Image 1 (cartoon, one colour):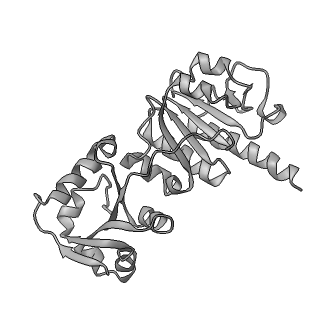
Image 2 (image 1 turned 90 degrees about the vertical axis):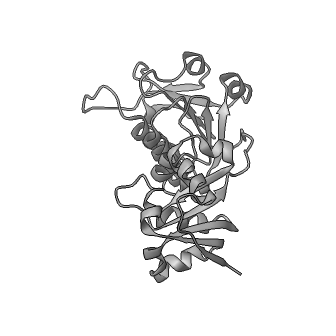
Image 3 (image 1 turned 120 degrees about the horizontal axis):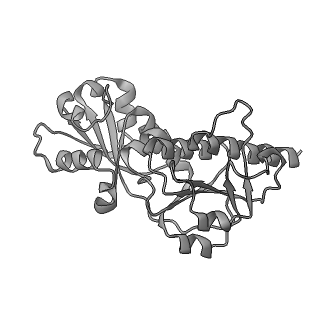
Length: 261
């Protein structure tokens, strides 16, 4: 049976904890909890995470039958005034519903999976977009090296649009730890003559994506099975890392589909 309660004080311990989660990208690591804001993320979680321990819904959201039904996936529902809900939001138009989930247990890397390796990517929007493309285009695993934007931070969650719940996510790897896995790394570089459409790609592949300004670690690039260049006849110097990732993922998926015919 779902338990409902109404909260009206900013000092309520749940709201204090959620303000911290919503504002500090790394707070989930200390608290062991993840805050999902908005109908889309909550729907993605409701389809894959059971049970949902806690839902938060604004008073206006509680008058919406669809949002009430979504909140009912949780064991507990807290109803809060709209101004208090807005304090938890980083959006111009705050969502009216959110879920509090336990941080998923840390997964171990699986060398058999099609993978993307994030080497110190800083921009949360880029990281979330890469996760979204990975989930859509057949990449099953994300290995994030130390220095990469926190995968379960609110900004990465928003940019990922629910992709987190379809992926095997591993954070905090070191270069040594990654190399010990002996994955078939594939790097991208504007300085190689090997074009992506012509390259021999391992299967499964582990795509190596590096820091937005510095690129991937020279040590990791040296360990790559292949290094490819994305054709850019338009003449731009480089692509955004999230755009480059989507192109690489699609090329691998296209080849896989062709081989299965």
